[in-house]
Length: 160
Image 1 (spheres, rainbow, N blue to C red):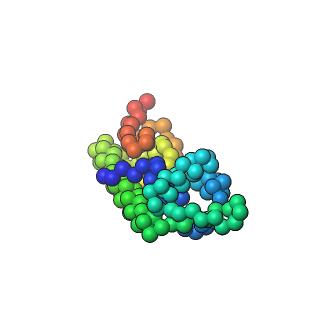
Image 2 (image 1 turned 30 degrees about the vertical axis):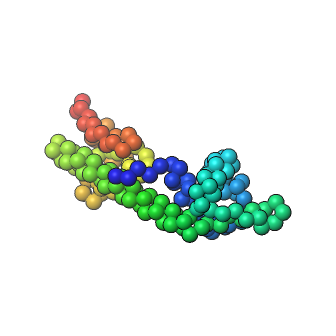
Image 3 (image 1 turned 45 degrees about the horizontal axis):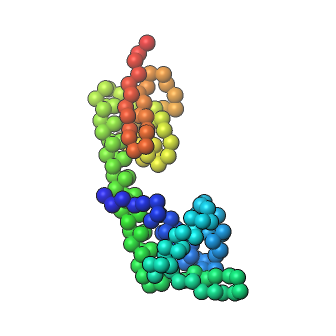
């Protein structure tokens, strides 16, 4: 599985924003990406040094960022890498969800509580629904799928 780094993610987002608005300021880009202006400046310098982006003066104090053909190729590669990484992670979580469901069925249960947030919990939730596993919002004795990062831990509650 290809590892898609945070820098690659930011550079892809930066290239996409520049392609939509080449006159965007670093402050605007920083706001759109939710990072500091210094982070945008660092990424832009790297992209410029590598020949992926050119800078032109649009007005006295205004710059225009232009993506070069190499930059367009980089954006395409980064987008493909992002999709491949996302799909690999999806497959991993789905496989783990199916294994957890297998454990649940071996115990004789067809219902579960899911504890956790985010995409991993959502994939687990969708997999349960597809596999005809009832998802409970509460229930003292229902088994739990506890989501922790990419892991799904199955917990069986003791009957009292």
